[in-house]
Length: 117
Image (tube, rainbow, N blue to C red; front, side, top):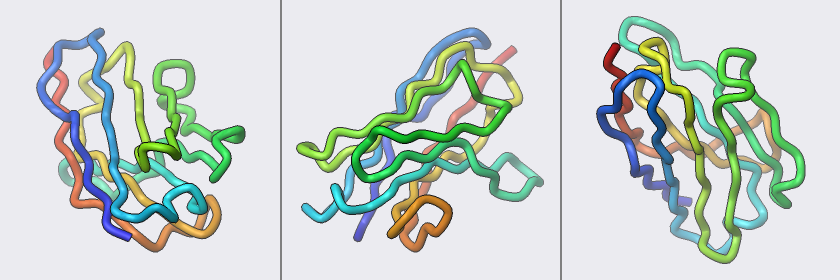
């Protein structure tokens, strides 16, 4: 499955962005999905994930209460609503798909999020 992220950009601290990830296949609804990020000089880290039905989500402690992951299976699209952005949220954000959460086999190319202080 091919994944294409969009929605990244430059925002001031405290602002919001919504990332989207569109999948190429109609089997999107059968995949668990996740968001990860990689900041400059750091390893890629988990941000959030969601099961195929969209009724079970998990978040990294660093984003809990500020970010919301959701999906629209009819549109083959995954979302990440990011509110209250902080400079430390600056990173390339990747979406991923897998048979179940925790095992992601397909990755997008990433979208850059920059937060100015």
